[in-house]
Length: 502
Image (cartoon, rainbow, N blue to C red):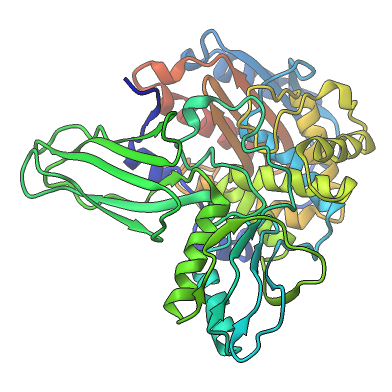
């Protein structure tokens, strides 16, 4: 019996919660951002807000048995409006992305971009590069197969027809730690827990869709892109009876680590699924294989195939790709709550702090310097990773509010506001709280891992100007109760709407 890692997909829910689209990005210009101003909170108004939260929000049945921390301050005047366990440690889930995102704004600069390069040992002579071709990763999670096809096209335009050495994948910009500390092993097949590398492709995943067969028991058709021989995909999916439950799942086998297995049933008559994003076992070899295929498609032969290694000094850059600059990267990161980008940002901070290879440990040093600079004791924050996927991460609601307050009072205010999700408008909040006053009035980062639900950000109030808040919920068992998730969503909508109407 083989050992394996398994995760149930629940495709429809997975896709509904997935990343922001290009349409989300266009909404930056249409959302009215909060501004300082408004009437100060009178003592009786603050007292009324506290009574409401105590009696109507934090006593809700869906929070029964949970550990709750909540800090709310008047953003412009910095006065405390509400505090419960504001100095207690909580597991923040993706609210922890506020730490690395706010640090990179200070440490990397607005012109920062991830750079991927193709380098060669020599210039081509009569169409032949004598030596190796190197694909050097610079930490770009969003490098695509289309980008690598453009690289191959550029080489063909330069007259290259053959590499008499190998195509060498170079991921030496960062260290070789593949996963964040404190990640759960059963997350590994999933798109949100990809292998971390300086040379990534397609956000660390391979894409696929499922189409049921013509009858129950027939194989499910699986369409996969981009094609790669860097791993195997075993299709064990079977068409289930019409109306049956979708039990499809991704498995990663301990004894065959380069295999991605899809198994279970997909119902007869169901539509072709949305994009199934399985984390690939080895991103550099994936990128190298996809690039090799692009070169071959352009008529460029590579005698030595794909190998891993490090480009030596003195190579020639024959193609380069720059990602978007930091403000847009931050929006991609926070909108979509992209865990891989969080880990790559952390290692890039490590490069800025201590040079190559970038490490999470050196990135954490940079984060601690930032926290100290805004009045947070670094010893009060435990950092396990850059994304918040780790159960080792700990921070207080009060410290998360301090980070948001520091961003508000910095030159980066508009960049931060433009990078946060907004209910009914963009990002992970695109379909959240529709039809409530929270729509368009809250600028949020949400977070969710097992038994943890978190929400932090800014809310535009009707008369008092913006407020800054962090609401941390740990030991939450609501997901195990019927209707628990919907109950929490309703409670959050009531909370945000009440704030917006003040």
